[in-house]
Amino acid sequence: MTRKWLRWMPAVVVPAVIAAGVLSGSLPASAGDPLPEKTPQQVLLMLAQHGEESLSGTLAQTSALGLPELPASGPGAGAPEAAWLELLTGPHTARVYLDGPDKARVQVMDRMAERNAVRNGDELWFYNSKDNTAAHMQLPADAAARHQDSPSTATPGDLADKLLAKLDSSTEVAVGPDTQVAGRAAYNLVLTPKSGTTLVDSVAIAVDGESGLPLGVELRARGQSEPAFSVEYTNLTLGAPDAALFDFTPPPGATVEEVPLPERKAAAAPPSDVAQAKAAKRPTVTGTGWETVLEFPAGAMKAPAADEPRSGAASLLDQAAVAVPGGRLVSTSLVNVLILEDGRILAGSVPLERLQAAAAQQ
Image (tube, rainbow, N blue to C red):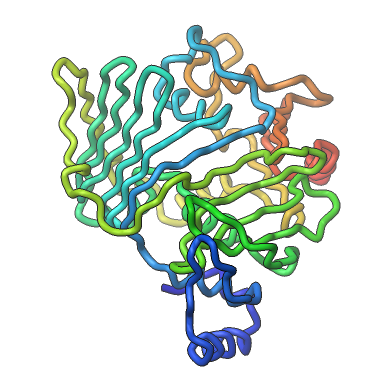
């Protein structure tokens, strides 16, 4: 399976690298052996061709984004979206089971509880053992096309695909010294922004030397000695997990909510008016590569009135916002979000000054 991000590579390089791989053969190294030397293009092709995987393993995630720890009580603390937003702070461990495109189970292990996201064909479940609540959704026949990311597994493969989708000439690509992840020898693919302005210092993707599967991803921010965000397997078994792992039944006494799918309603307005309305909410893009800034127009994102109570993730994000000239800033080591008084929202992996300059251009 070839990923779209391969389009950035020179057309002549792809067949040449494939031919080189066929002629030289593939001799995957064991955990103690050095891997055969490969160019960045060859490692990118390994990533592109690893395909859908069946596996089971344990993921370790760490975050040092600068967001405040979320409270255990208070407004919004118990909201479902707040529970998943909490994954952006502190260390977390999760068990992951995958078997093809329509079977997945993720178990996020909390101190005294467990959160589960399970997909088995057209059945989708979310469960939180802390309050014994579950949510169920019946996916439609075209679920493969409409819900490719459900449930969100947050695996190194998911993150690597998103990062590589942005790959272009603004990034230097190199292969660093081999690394070891979950006892497996891996290539260390390093992406370094050529820009000196972006908040991102580098991205490292550990690529399994045998299968091409991403085993870990590490994002570093400028000025930080420790990674701003990392996720990697601590143990991994390739192959189909026990099929029973994807059969989920709520425990006795659980509160179960049936979540309906949003209906596809026919447009009441003429198609041209609907298209214009959608276009009016699309962000304006300024800058390129790692210096890209997205500007959402006022009203594109629904916000409560000043006297309306805020709950869920919105109230929790308020804790991270600080006052700046013209609005408020939610700042992390990798991304800044500027919320202007006139309702516009600007976001990018750039300093506040770049966001303010982009806002002044409009």
